Image (cartoon, rainbow, N blue to C red; front, side, top):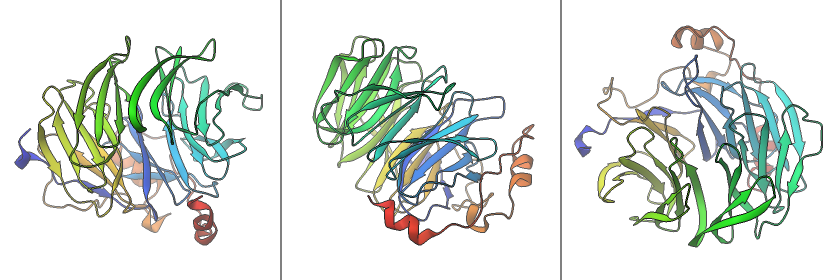
Length: 355
């Protein structure tokens, strides 16, 4: 990809504090969606293609460190510094359940079959909650060597992947036995771990390194040194020929997967980049930053390059331009996705946000 072809991004405002996690849903009959986690305590749902704001999930009282959508984008989940993980109705924004923990929850992930929600955090315990019986006690796997930072599912929900905040490596757990079956060794703590869409690779970041691992045999396939410490990386899902990485230099770098050569560099954020993710079709990718914005970058020529600011359905006015605007922008999508848009006590949220 020629640098001069890098498109001007859509800039999505709305979060009042740093954006620390992004998650794209798979493509559904209503399109695909992007959910963001922020230290402002309020995850936001957006149209994944346009970046248009759909709704805000309100209820957490501390920083939200992780967020995800289920396979059908019907439910959302979030993990928070308020010692809880919450389950949300992604169509209405209603809170369906709050799963209480004894310490900060840093990561959450739905199983592929949507039946389980996996959480992990400072307690060093992996918890599996049954979505069909949310009031039931979770299954616990409690021998993580450190506080958990990331979690993911692998091998049709037969394997769990986790990394720790203070210890290097990625641990692979057999769901049935609850035991570690493999450790992918890294020098520094792994800040991001992504399973590729074709389930061939696990992409990890640690320190200033991006690594690609064979997701079936667990061997190291490629390792590339980055220009700076990076916090997140994502592999292009369709061709697998390039990857993106973001970190402390505030730029979103694009690299050739096969050679590691930098083939693009996107500048625009005004703070370190905490998270980057490719959309499910690979036609765009999103970045979230300390500056509180999400930027959506096109992988090919932009459809509309004269404006570098997102002017779609923005949450700044909250209620204005709500569900009706979303329905117009999303062809054939007539289910209300209003979310919760009432005013909230920003000061109270901020007090707990950096816990």
